[in-house]
Length: 116
Length: 111
Image 1: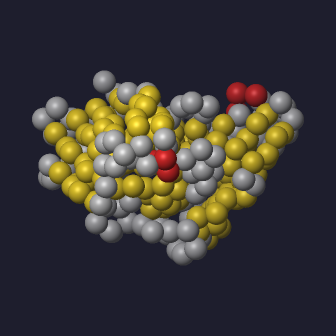
Image 2: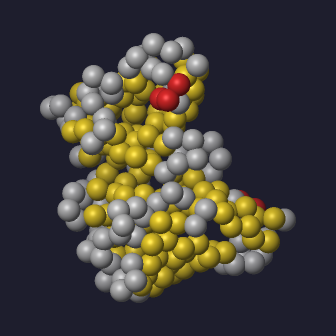
C-alpha cells in the first residue's frame, strides 16, 4: 500500500480566490491522480499528474482552472483557481504503483473545500 | 451505458449480512474494486477481483463477479457498526487504463 497525506484537510475560501492543495506520498510512485468528489456524488478524474511534464487533463477540465505540479515522484499539487461556489467539493489525490498484481490505486484522505 | 451503476442506500442490523451490488460497463475490464469511504475520510481499498475469477473471499468480505451480466457484488458477513460507510465499486477500463467509479452505496448499520 501507500501512505498519502494531503494539506490542507479542509478550507473555506472566498469566491475569486485560489487554493493550492498538496499531496505527499511516503514512497516513489509512477502515477499520481487528482479527483473531484462533489457533494453526494462519485469520483471524477480531473487529471493525471506527470512527473517532469504537463499534466494530462480529462474532458471538461483545463489547466488554467486546475494547474497541477509534479516536481518529483513523491509530491504533487493541485490549484483550484478563481474559485466559485460550484468548486465546493472534496479533492482527492490518488497514487498507483504499476506492475503489481492489480495496479491498485490508493487514495489520500481528501481536502474538503467550501467556497462562499 | 457509460455509467457504473450502484443502488444508493442500504440499512442493515448489526450482525446481519449486507450485500451491495454494482453493474459495470465494460466486459473487458481487467480488475474490479471495492472501496470504502467513512464519513469525513478518503477512500480505502477494501478488496479487488481479477476478471477471470468468479469469487474472492477475504475474511468477512465476499466478492462475486458475473462477467456475463457485468455484475459485481460485495457481501459483508456479520456487519458491524464500523462498516457504516459509502461503498464504491470501480472498474479498470482497458481502453484508457483508468478507473471508473460507481455513484456509491451508503450502508447504515443499526445497532
